[in-house]
Length: 181
Image 1 (spheres, helix red, strand yellow):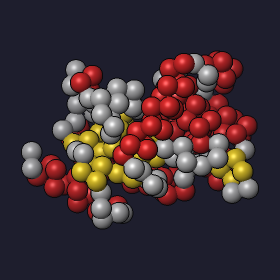
Image 2 (cartoon, helix red, strand yellow):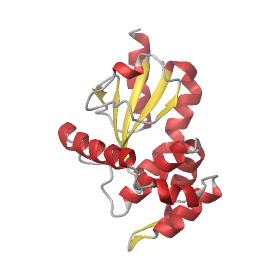
Image 3 (cartoon, one colour):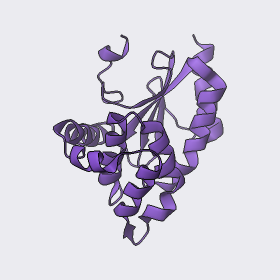
């Protein structure tokens, strides 16, 4: 598998992938589940996946910059163990204002939102401290430092940083990569 060979600061073997794992164009998104801009971008990213079909994949990198984001990442990683990553991700982002509050995160609410999206939270609360999940958090945090990520979301398309930030800039960069194939 092409994926197993990818092990760089941008893409790790453990990174969640949305879309076709073997797509020729890879969007890497450094994202924070508590970040409002990431929440706003999620439907845009989903629509790009729909529009480009098998030609594009999104690799998510956790960038836990906000208070409580590390726990939100644990929720997402336990969802991945239970094969409910995408519905839980969608719910966590969609209902972000309910749990990622400016005065401080309400992580009980985040867990309840995940449960409503199909997560078995009894099992997940046991799994959340698994060494594998801890190492994902640690490696992603180290890569965020190495790559020099200052804010979320930060996008790369086939390794090229998105400099013209916004939906149009992202689409233009994807299109340029597709045209170069």
